[in-house]
Image 1 (spheres, rainbow, N blue to C red):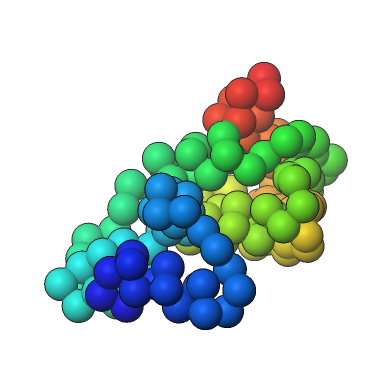
Image 2 (cartoon, rainbow, N blue to C red):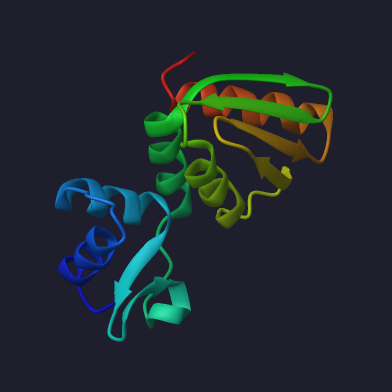
Length: 132
């Protein structure tokens, strides 16, 4: 896609009505950027990578409703249908403490490298989401 108008039109054809400001925010949260060759992820769009720390903190503020951890696992609760976008951003950030994520509809399981990494990540997510 070369413009948000085109993307908005394609989404509408599939029954998804979204306002332009919402589309713009969601693209940013997912790490989709516009480059010379259109929209894509980083080098795919021919542009530099976005600031992943900002993307993660904004996504947590937007989607995370609660966060808890036990041992090496962080559990993040979101609203319905919001776990996937947040998990995508957490994975794309390539944070050293995150080994991977599994997201359902409203819950994300984040596997961490250690229990101290899980505690730190849970604290960060809570802080970014305004839950701390």
